[in-house]
Image 1 (cartoon, one colour):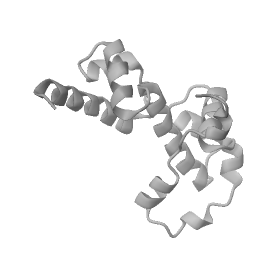
Image 2: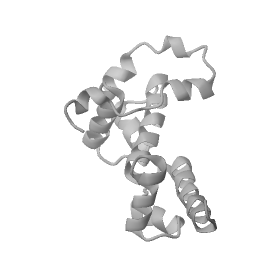
Image 3: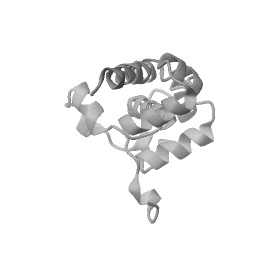
Image 4: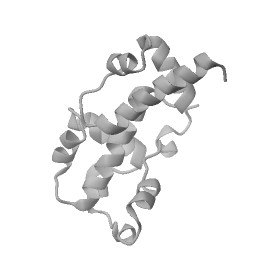
Length: 141
C-alpha cells in the first residue's frame, strides 16, 4: 500500500470506530464522511470496498448486534430495544432484524438463549453476530 492508501484506511477506520462507539446516536453518511475526511460519495465507495458493506449497512448490523444482546436479557420490550439502539422506526428495525437474524425481534426475545449463559461475552458476541440471512434473499445476486 502506498502512503495515500494507508492514510485513507486510517480515516475509514476512524469512521468505523465511530459507528462501533456511537451506534445508538444519530449517525448518517455525511457525518461519517466528515469523520473520515472524505466526500460523501468517495467515503461510501471506499467504505464498501474496504469493509464489504455500505456504512449504513454496517451501522445497522452493529445496532442489531446490540439489540440481540438486549433482547436476550429480556428486561426490555422490543420497542424499548429499538429506540435504545438508535433506531427511530419500529417497522424498519423489525424488518432489518428479521433480515439479518432470520426471525422477528419478538420471536428472538422469547427463544431459548440458555446455551449462551456459559459462553464468555467475547465469544457470545462472535457467535451471535448478525449476518444477512440468505434465505430471505433467495434468487437475488
